Image 1 (tube, rainbow, N blue to C red):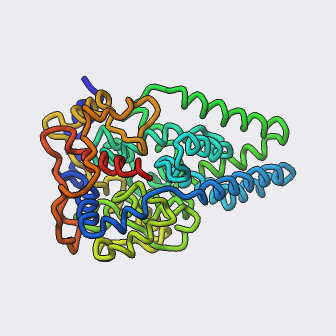
Image 2 (image 1 turned 30 degrees about the horizontal axis):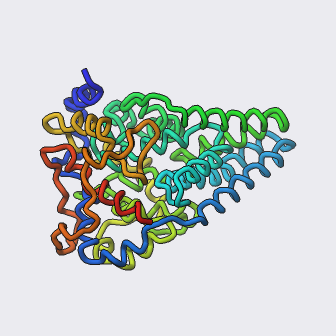
Length: 406
């Protein structure tokens, strides 16, 4: 039995009916075509990379190193408080930096982005950047598809994370859940990049422990665990991005002050529509094509999102859009990725085959084949999956083809 078959068997239960099920493809490919048909030249000028991401990452890493040295003589209660308030904020900043870097948006050269990701991982204590890059690309390609998008809570989580106590416990260990879920739902073989990630991060951890003692390690680790939990205000983006707050809408943007600390990760609809636009230009996309975004449900407070999650009994891990694989679609998608390498240069992960231009969806070099479309008042129309697995990824591949000209 394949992994996708096992997942679908688990989904064929009464409990799984709590999810919102759709038979359509993800909405971003359709909206991307519509925006490009109307504002193509203006939008393409936003593609590229931004070196400022690197300077911000280095600055936050140096801040965390300085704080690690500083707290070595503090009392344990002060270390705990600083771990939540300072380290939690700084490390959540670095987690979102890894999201930005995973799309190779800090440098033109991929290897520089990979090195920057390793640097950002030093003070997170736990090696995460390499596997995050792999699974995050799956999230974009398989959005909402069980067995592909590991960002989706499992049926097990949706049936047990109920009530305030259950939500608090789940929210406290959310980073662990986020790390373990992919290993169960969509396991991947370790790569040399994983080995480098583990070696560099653990070497840094060992150096901090050897020279400064246990308190700095606890400071950094508590920042990673608490900053990546649902008990930290910045953790609100983990729910705000895709938890359903409006019927018919799958992805949500947040427009508020915390975007300044998180590389504009709140501009999530804009990001999914155009993953090749760096965080510093996402607001310009909204300015260019306001009619595509202004009528959508949007968040203005991550704290409000967290409050809704904990206080409202109707909000839980089941508040996600799921698309069931039809006629072996998920298995076909899996085989298509593995055999044909449908990862253009901007999304290719370690261990994935290189982009096969003969077997995969060809790069047309233009959007001339895309028929113009009138922007919808609401994101009601979705691009359907075709009978061939390649059609599900045509737009993602085309976006990657375009990004190669950056």
